[in-house]
Image (cartoon, rainbow, N blue to C red; front, side, top):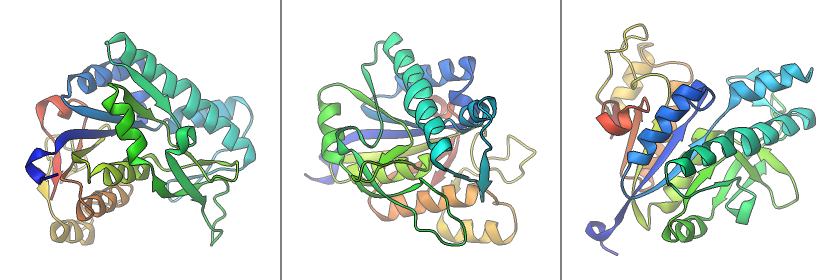
Length: 260
C-alpha cells in the first residue's frame, strides 16, 4: 500500500482531570467525536484511583511519577481504569452516536506486557509493553467500532498489569503505522509544551529533537513532559506521521505543539 493511499487514523491519549470531571469529559468526547476517519481513545485515571484507594485505606506510592502497584492497589486500578472511567467514556461516546468498545490489553490479547523487573524500585504489578495486536484493533475499526483503551495490559500468565497510558498510546500508534497514516495526540491540561509554565499562551508550536535537548538543558522542559516527548520522538522514528501535544480543544483548533 503506497504512502498516499493510507487511510487516516488518530490515536488520542487523554488523562488527568479531563477524563475525571464531568464537564471536561463531556467537552473532550464532543471534540473527539468531531475527528474524522478512524480513531482510538486511550485514557488514564490516576486521580480517581488515588481517591478510591484513600477511601479504602490503601496507601498510594509514587516513584518518579510512576505508581507502585502492589496486589491491593492492582485491584483498585483495575476497578477504576477498566471499570468506572472506561465505561463512563464508552457510555458518553455512545450518547454521541459513536459505537465505542471499551477494552483492556487482556481483551482479545490486544496488548501483552512483561512485568517490570525489580531494580532500585519494585514497582509491583506494572507492565512494560512487548506486543500490540494492531491487526485486531484494525478489524474492530473496519467494523465501525471505536476502541477505548484502559491503561491495563496482561502477561499471558494470568496477571493484569498496570501500564503507563502514554506508552500504550505510543505503542498502539506504532503498531498501526504500517496500515494507517497515524497522528498521535497527547491531550492534557495545557495547550501544548510551554516556554513558560505560568503563561498559557507561550505554546512552542513545533519542536524537533535538537531543540528538545536544548530546552531540557535550559530547564524549560522538565518533569513529566520529558518522558512524554521522548515517547513522541520514538513514535515518529518508528513510522508515526505526526505527534501533537495539546489540550482537548486542540483536536478542533489545531493549537498545540507539533513534534517533528
